[in-house]
Amino acid sequence: MQPLFENKKGLITGVFNKQSIAWAISEQIFSGGGICGFSYMPDKPDDERKKNFSRVSKLIEGNPQAVFVHPMDVTKDEHVENLMAVAKEKLGGLDFLLHSIAFAPPDDLNGDTIDTSRAGFKLAMEISAYSLIALARAARDILNPGASILTLTYYGGERPVPGYNVMGVCKAALDSIVKYLAFDLGARGVRVNALSPGPLQTISGRGAGVDEMLGLYEAMAPLGRNITHEETGRCGAFLLSEMSSGITGEILHLDGGYNIMGSPGRMLDQIKAARS
Ligand SMILES: NC(=O)c1ccc[n+]([C@@H]2O[C@H](COP(=O)([O-])OP(=O)(O)OC[C@H]3O[C@@H](n4cnc5c(N)ncnc54)[C@H](O)[C@@H]3O)[C@@H](O)[C@H]2O)c1
Image (cartoon, protein in one colour):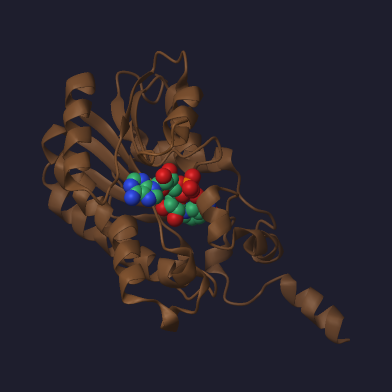
């Protein structure tokens, strides 16, 4: 079998550091022979050490398969357009595009959904859901036939997960956007899917209450364990590659089976033991 990403080029958004899901997926793309360009969240003008840029640059230092690192704040149309212009210049066309971006103001994320502020809701939706539309539209003219777009979602968009709050509402919108974009771009042979991993230790994950969720998944999921960064990388690479060529508009759960459960499963034994 030829390497999964031989002669394939694409754009990766959302690498913050080594723990980022986008980085786990990039590592798999690199090992499959793919070429990537990266965007990163622009550093604040007063950050002389340019921490965001430095972190991503260090990760790809000396890697000939990583061809550029370019700043992009997804709330700014000119940033998104500029990123696509750089991608066109350096990569030609895109065979894959990874959207791995989310944000909600901490006060809104940590408060009950009923207390979500209007401004916090708008910002969270813009960065975590609308941004997929913005990126897909800006990339439209440079997506190669058969190209694959992938975003990252979470089960909290399908069922209430206390603590996930406004981000769950954003993920519900994102899941729907995946399906509408899959239809819009399907005529051009372009696919759009979402990967829905269980909790993983990342900067964003910790902000959304991952620490408490890890124990719950271990106790409740049919597999009796949490998923790993490497598994997330492999599944993401699968959905971005031609291996998944017949799949579009799909939300793929990578959670040890947690989402299929209709009861706390083996956790019931612990509950029974505590009550006896
Ligand atoms: N960690 C988990 O447990 C988990 C589970 C399921 C889904 N996800 C999703 O995976 C995706 C990636 O998150 P992660 O866990 O790798 O955390 P992460 O913090 O490493 O990645 C989030 C990225 O979003 C970027 N970002 C935020 N605001 C932005 C903006 N305005 N413009 C451009 N980029 C911006 C950040 O710079 C960062 O690179 C998110 O959509 C998250 O909701 C995470």
